[in-house]
Length: 200
Image (cartoon, rainbow, N blue to C red; front, side, top):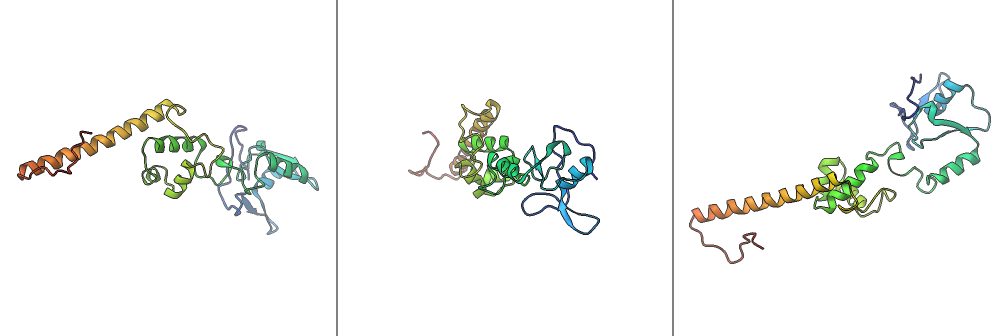
């Protein structure tokens, strides 16, 4: 059932998952079992009584047998506490098998927002809801990830790209104002007192 896996990479279960992010499979006797338990048994044999199959990688949907090890209930609880899973019920950030974003993307999102990208604009890039992005940028979630960031802390390429994007947006606004002014001039309109020529 389990194909040979790269020891250094997670093998994500591609089929049915439980609500808590663990893969599941129906066995020959009609019972439903965790996919990672089946993976361990396929490679190592029967699971000793009182033992649990734990993840070294802490990715619940991972079935790479190289990432699995046996432990007691106490080991499981201590492992969960070390990895901060007990309080929220799931590992934080990209270690959560159900996470749609990566830690490096969170860093980029915060940098881009710091340089003027709106939540709606970021939503189109990262396919996430604006309110989710707002929570990310304000540090309400993904608290473990780097941030909030400014250009001085960020990857220089990411930061400069954000700056360049902001300058291009300003240039577009200026071009639009120039076009508007030219059209009004052709029509013989007088210059309104409140017209913003972009000189300030």
